[in-house]
Image (cartoon, rainbow, N blue to C red; front, side, top):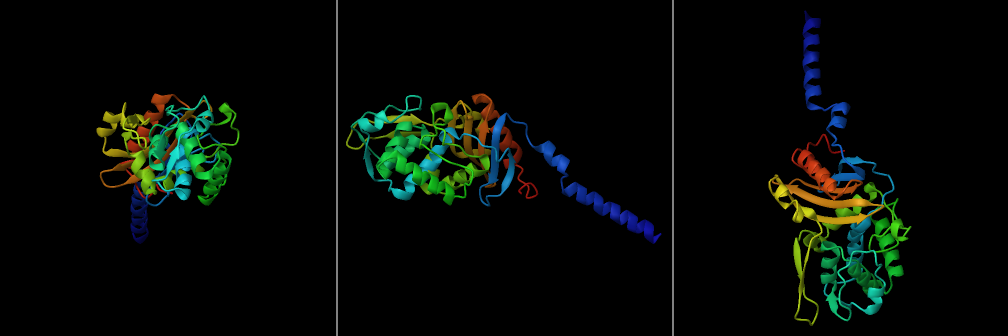
Length: 297
């Protein structure tokens, strides 16, 4: 009789444990299917991984690199400093880079350049910030790589502040999802960058010029997919987009739910633009709203 009771108790305990702790098969089954080169998702508060795929595969970050550009600028320059957009700077902007085609001879503050850099991904602003803070792009890139190492990025290298890669003849820019999530977290911990990437629009007022212009975010969560996000129980509070042929469609997105749970996802897709946002919405719906400590590794 005693042995029977012990057996029953053991089976009850085992049943409870298997109910509470998901099996490896269950966890694998719960990982969403995506069209991606790689991705990495973390809990923003602790920095701990929630899920990832091909985390250490070499990838190309495209314009998400501009988050590192911004972090580097803010280490060496104040936001009120002014930089003139010269003909020399304009000539340095590659023809295949996304640019606002700013008027030469006009002056902008570092803060304004950062808005144009991060909201609309302006390559001219990247070049202007590099030249204005370091004196040359070459020296600025050295600073970028030093910043990357300081963040613990051991499998990354950068050779331009724009995010161009091998498709444009820049063979020294590459990273991994596991490395770049460190930039993503550092960017959202920087109050200037966090404030900027949350904006849907921004009015640029050149120094000493009455005429201004409005820029709009390249993040479709702020435009095309805005209603879809609004109907969910989470909110996008920061992002940076990027696209090149080698990189695919990329997005670093930060989202928070009504309970205050915040996640950061660095996603490097190999599908089209629509698939990118579909995949990330799947992540946020599945994991942000159901964060379980057992999932966080």
